[in-house]
Length: 140
Image (cartoon, rainbow, N blue to C red; front, side, top):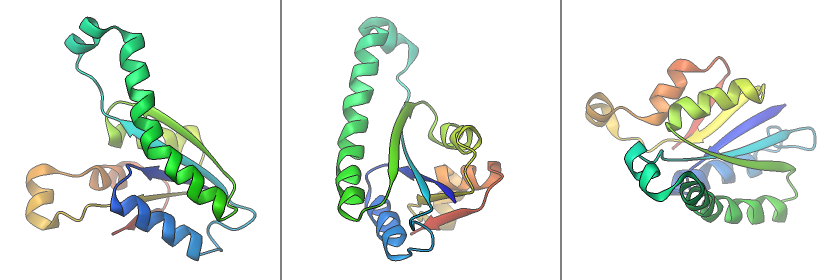
């Protein structure tokens, strides 16, 4: 089974990792785990002022802050994985990654803002669930 794990470094990411590690049927020896971090897009004016290379370097540094601890955790638990990062709209990038990677399942944390928060703000998890064609496991 190929699983996409969308991570942002929050406590919900840690809970999703713990869930995968404790449920060997999901992240067992036959599983392919793809860990994805999405960095926020930089406004075009800022990108023009700083330059694309500087923005990409900053995005890479920020992604590594999230991904390196996850890599250490997964190695310690002997789970095969690969990591990637991108920048842009988180929901759209996660949906695209599920298609590009041809995953069988998506695992991600949710902030659980509650009904009012979801109605007013929307959430990445809510948008992703509406747009993906694979099962989604939300960990709260």
